Length: 248
Image (cartoon, rainbow, N blue to C red):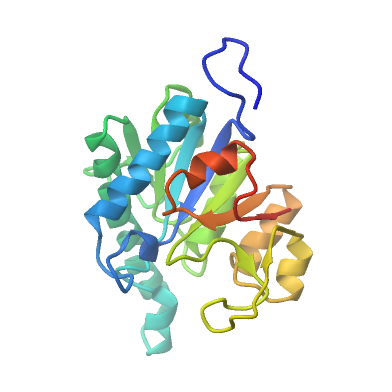
């Protein structure tokens, strides 16, 4: 990699990113609750990218380790009510991740799409950008603030709004990219180094939901799917190493 004009940082692939984390990635074995060790590992990965590459990092968190609105709706609960509960779950994860980041010295702000000023800032685009410019990590919680939209769509929307260069979709449980089939069930599944948005949609690959993929395609937002829990992987993606799968 080349160096920045001030010689302090290598030039990263993108200067501003949105890191998308599922709730299960933050959970204990089985994907529920919160794993403090995992939170701190992710915090150290983020710090590495901030301090050594100078990258602006925003994070969108899911809430599946506590609640899944779509599944609850399938049992008869009102979908809007179920999704509102899910939004609260993402705020819990956002606060936990903020604590882990600040424990290792990284100034962090949680911004929520659903206002709850006692515990987090309301999402305001210009304020979020200003936080990033000041070197803070910004965690976007509460999804888009609307039912029926996933946190994948929230990640795509926020990435476009803050003019991020890419979305880094962090996977877990040893899955390190996009495969032709579920590698846990099909040992013959092939991992793609790169794939187009249309191929993801046409082949029904579980990268992000169709709304998020279409939004990224329309706004030319690349997505990198990679194993976020492998040490150094986040930085390697930003340095242009062949890690994970590039969707674009």
